[in-house]
View 1: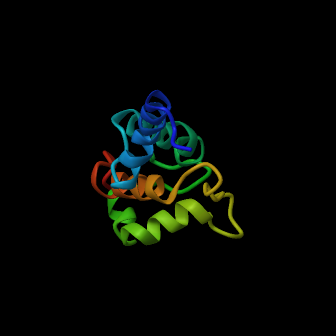
View 2: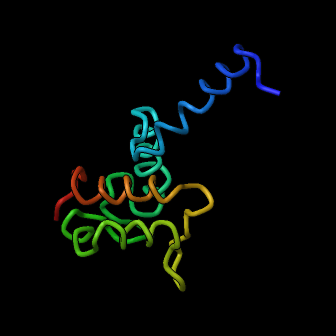
Length: 111
């Protein structure tokens, strides 16, 4: 039995956010959330300005020693034997790649 037109329209509208993510684009709002996560949550160990603390500093020069996907994997899986946790339970691969790209290109710290 086909869905009534209003339910079909509602179903289609619910899938719009999923379709937007499927093309590889994060919303501006999500990018802002990820940037906040980077400087607040990651910053709790790496320093609020990424200059280091419990964890090492994260300057662009150091972040560019990895390719984007390798850095994203490090974000998702953490570093065994260190205090660096894996974020796979909280971030998607796409979001980890966005963070890696941000650290490599938009990172204000370059030492």
